Image (cartoon, rainbow, N blue to C red):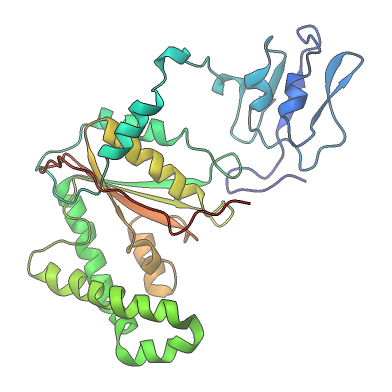
Length: 305
């Protein structure tokens, strides 16, 4: 029995070349499924596996002689590559500087984003860690200012159809069910947001996605770890910053297209394959503004045991 995803239902197959194996045991030490063991000074497939090989690739990546091959779960030996030299790595100071420069950008130049830049963002995002391989993160790409505004108009019209969710009677009805915090969030944030998304859009002000020349929606299947699309989106934003783009998370779209018949029709219209526990839209574009100062951020708390 293997751990299922939408892309793989069976466990991967482990192949060992005994002639190449030196019995070093590195692969055994990194396999946390206990799919491998040393028998008579050679690595062998174990009968003590917890889930069955999930094709994480750790054993192949660490084997110094290439004695192990993994096949299945969207993985093959051709997916393993030599790591770049360490001297190519960014230092902590370089990385921290990049992170300090990144902030939410909502003002974009009227300039399209080149296809090779989009590809670089996706390639970087693919390196993000995941709860379980193969990744069940899906990406919807909306490229071009016209398509971006078309999507915003569709979402604005959709918001009109579910505007009852911000009405006084609905909020009063739901308060006992979803609690004080959600009630405060709806009244203080989402109610005025609905107004902005509908009435302001009709006035020509697109506060839904700011007419960004590129939108990416990162979402997952019901099988995936809920954190996966958020981690991937973060990698994409950092990559975009390194490429000279500005980014902004658009957190209010995803929650409203998950439940109900209208939400399902909206997803189907825009090629969104699944409703997802977590997901995030990100706007990308060349900034039309330049910040010369950063803003310090803090955690709500940091505890140590």
